[in-house]
Length: 161
Image (cartoon, one colour):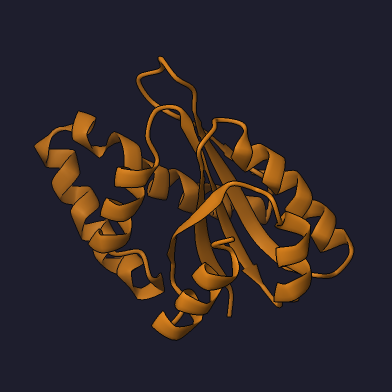
């Protein structure tokens, strides 16, 4: 089963920088990245820029739809008005099955703000100690994951250095 994790960086370039490192780790077969996307929110901008890491053609099209819906819920719903907001509310109910519920949306919205960036990573089969070593020194914070509480606590502890 794939795990969705959201990592926040205190600068707008952090998510792209770490995505490059994660892609290198995948080439070394230390993690399997199913999909990824970044959000960058430079200071002075009204809303963030989002980018899917992989192609949006073919197999990536479903991922593009997923990221588009998720980022719409996270960052743009307040601008859509009540009618569209209600329709999206019905869709969010189905996303709760994969760990994306109102709590997830609220916590990501509260953390990813102007002047920051975030890496959304759908992955599995990570060699956690090797991934941790490769990302050591990065100023990043785990915002949310769909892991069990015990696994999430262990992940937070490992990357809290």
